[in-house]
Image (cartoon, rainbow, N blue to C red; front, top):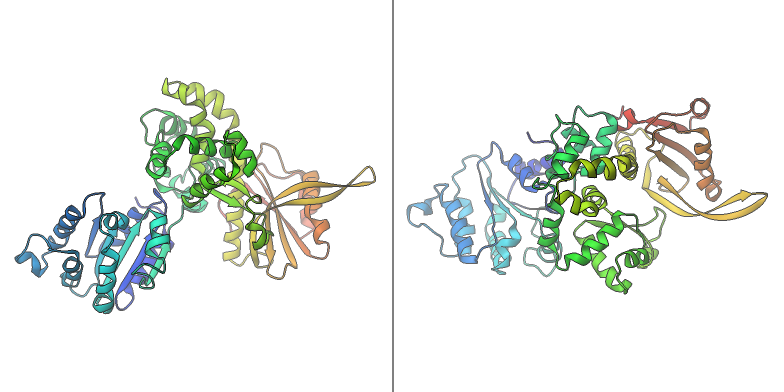
Amino acid sequence: MFIGRKQELQFLEDKYKSKGGQLVVLYGRRRVGKTETLREFCKGKPHVFYSCREISDKIQLRSFSEKLLHEKIPASNYITEFADWDSAFKSIIDLPYKAAKRLLVIDEFSYMCKYNESIPSILQALWDELLKDENVMIVLCGSSMSFIEKELLAEKNPLYGRATGIYKMEAMNFYEATLFFPKYSARDKIIAYSILGGVPHYLRQFDPALSLDENIKRNILTKGCALYSEVEFLLRQELRETLLYNSIIESVALGATKLNDISQKSLIDDTSKTSVYLKNLIELEIIEREFSVDEGIKNQGNRNRGLYRLTDNFFRFWYAFVFTNFSDLEGGDVKGVFDYAIKPKLHEFASLAFETVCREYVKELQKAGCLPFRYKRMGRWWGKTTVRRNDKKEIQETEIDLLAISEDASKYLVGECKFKGKQFDYGEYLDTVAKFQPQKADAEMFYYLFSESGFAKNLVAEAKKNTNIKLVDIEEIVCPQK
């Protein structure tokens, strides 16, 4: 059963129903579900779906010809293969789809261009002269983001400016991901998301009828299962020097967030070299460089600023628990690794993803118009704050899990996220207030406190008196009551 992707399917449907020719580029990282989404979109529509392979140009043309000629276009009465790409693409208008758009999907388009760099030029010429005015829709799909962004969509490329729609597919958000596990508890949905993230291929590996613990053991830790070697497979496909990349990703997964720390833990002497490797991982959307939500654009250009984090939850889990216990897992000690290395740390591991889930919850409230103000920026905040101890002022570094700022910076939503086995207490609320209020004494502050295990009675009483405090429990976070 196909799950989620309503926004992507609606985008494609709107293009399909639009008048005139449509040239759509759909792209995103591997495993994010592009092909499945396109196949779902094509259901019930006459179409040609061609998946490119890494083969020579001549064989690619022959394979593409077979697909088109199989549709009983007029040329199929005379030839078994098109002589060139120009005539092959031109035949799209001959597809015998009465009263329907002539729909062609080319999956992994970069493979088609790899051994024939003239294909974008051929397609551009045909589009300008013929196809843009015909009732056709061509979807070019790709996983090589550098090819799509730096070549196909770049100003120097012949197809620049021709696309009538460009859509970059991202991993599913938390609320779409939970649809894979409808019977899990709210807590287990968050932990499952902290392990698998929003990549459909990963989510499908878990059996929703099995417990979370059993799924981890069977479908991640057991040698031979799809997720056991998934990370290594993807890295070898995309990168060389995988030993160095392994060291860098592992150091980030285990808590190194600054450039110098990552270099030291990866045993790379030159931080400029580490910076290059990190840049490559950012392009692959494995790692992101995160800035405090109030950081200016100028400061973001400084390579020593910002924190590095893994964007892919599964990569973070794999490097934290599988990579570090690989010898034992190769020997089949699945139960031992789970019981002693994973189970005691899993709850704490999920706390970082819980912050992401809380931010998604706030986004949902904004879309529903249920926040006290409309924010312009939202993210994590870190910086220095002044505290008073023993009648002396001290400056200390602190951070806020979630900070949303109105456009005129007159209103702030301060969020604190507690994913732990005890209640959010009143003292923790006071700590949250102290973190940020001194800097913004003149602003109106709203406090959203998120808790896995409920709230202390005195905090509940305070929230009843102060309407600027909102207490959000785990059930509300997972299933927002808009």
